[in-house]
Length: 160
Image (spheres, rainbow, N blue to C red):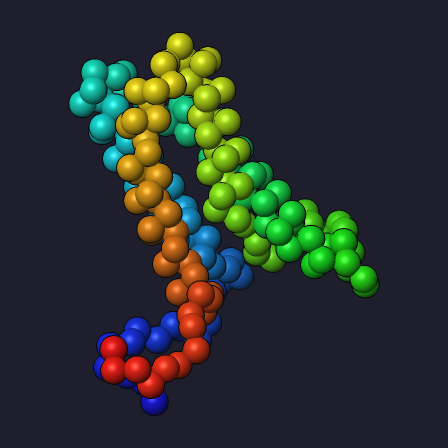
């Protein structure tokens, strides 16, 4: 029975555009990144920063974040890749899923610091600008779990 207050996940987390799969989880993460960069760019310019600075820093932060997210996932679910009967090379198969947000934030921050240093931008004003938009990106990206039918608890009979 579907409760009136629930929003059921789609039966399939992939939309096929011909032979090309568009995965709902990836779409949510990419949309979150785009929105965060756009809003951060506006916030940065409102502080007196140059147009394009945030986009340039994102070119460092996003790839670092993806690598960090994958490393974190592999570290926390190591048995999938290094346990009995596992194939360690599958740790590189990012198209099969598996990113950890805390690793993405940690290594993404390292990428942002590298990008900021290259542009001569002070770190504290940069972090003050992008911190709220990182939360926004995480909120948008979390919808990917809805597409994947993840992070739901079991049904309850409680009144709420």
